[in-house]
Image (cartoon, rainbow, N blue to C red):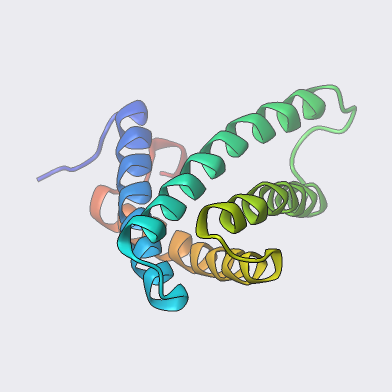
Length: 143
């Protein structure tokens, strides 16, 4: 059976699966590490997901707007590192206050949880993407 999808369907399926699985794992992780109940941990996970998705959209729009005006085209390793660092810094500034407020904890504890989320999603993204490509095949751009 050929599980290859159109580019749009592939992106939608990828996002829905990635976020759904991530939401469940993040909720369980926050429950375990924070001793929070499902409602608090689930709300923190869902809120974090919404913040990350919204920030990703806004940040990438702004970055690509800036990038279009640059005389040097392409994405060098330096530009990719700056992109990643700025994205994560902005996400940190948004997530820590949210987690502190939602979970009724201090900023330092929220920073620790956010660092855990960052570490988890770095590994999760690599594993999920690898598994997704194995199941559904590589996108046309990579074949």
